View 1: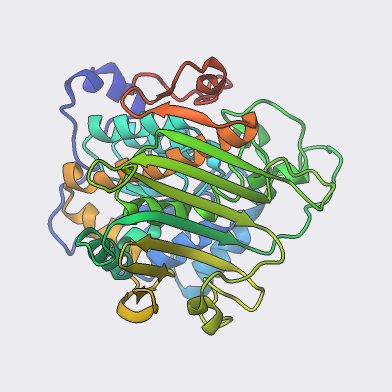
View 2: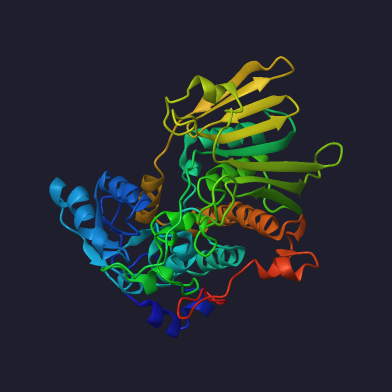
Length: 450
């Protein structure tokens, strides 16, 4: 097993002649897959539970910078269920050198996603990286490059890509079921209360705060820059468009059949609350894409909207199921999903179901449904790895995350922007182009050459 350091030393980056997997030769579908989960405070426990539910899979290690989390998580998911306790790490750089680990999930705050994934990729580990796969546009490009250089699997965290519902949705639209699909909309209406205000304080015992900050600027410890609330701070998160909205953005882009936009305009604000949140809780982002085969102006439009408080449900599909599915339209008043508009009708889509309404009378049309298992897809792929095919996942993930970052740049600059998909830069706009990346805090630097 090569360490990341030896891997680079032997010139593997230049040749691309890399091994699939880690120390073991894969004997077949019955071989045991040993995984790790990096980041176990929130969503990381969903990864643990999902992997534990799969046959012949062992969660062999946990990694988190907050040592206080280990006892409760290990008891809950392992020892109380008669499972062997996993190894624990606080530094991912040590974890990726563990020869017994075949792959791992990155479930850290957003500012660590790409760097953690690249550490693992360069160490020969298969990696599933939570959404958004990158904290900025530059990181997404580097992650895609790494997935093409090293012969390991890299899965993007857009879980709906594994659902039959989404797959049949995309096929229906691509086959012309709605005619010319000229507009898609992503909805992210989630009740979110104020995060309040907290003063800076000493780092809690057991928290490796320098590791937690990683590539971000060094700042004092604050509860509103730590567990979960980091989402609303630009140093670590991307607001709700990069949190919940990344799912709806991905589906909108997929159904619309587009990659990168030529025009972006976003506006909104952080309203109602005088608290520590930096990101907007109301946001409307618009994207324009070329559509050579379309009519009229030959363009497609993608809309994304986040609302944090009082809202309608946009379509009867969600109102009918309010509180029933616990995700698309809950008793708390949340609505998260997609709408597609075409020349023949429109479609409403939730996580596990889509419906169409055809013609001027909006008559019920074709439907589809079905949920998959994103974690099982990753594990099955490890047993028979085909990186060239599987890693299209991370390429698509980058395109969807790119929309988030471009929209946030437009919002933060307070103006519309023109983008060149060929060069992946803004046109004649140094200020905007500077925001495609960030200054990294050594030694936690996303490398230019991967």
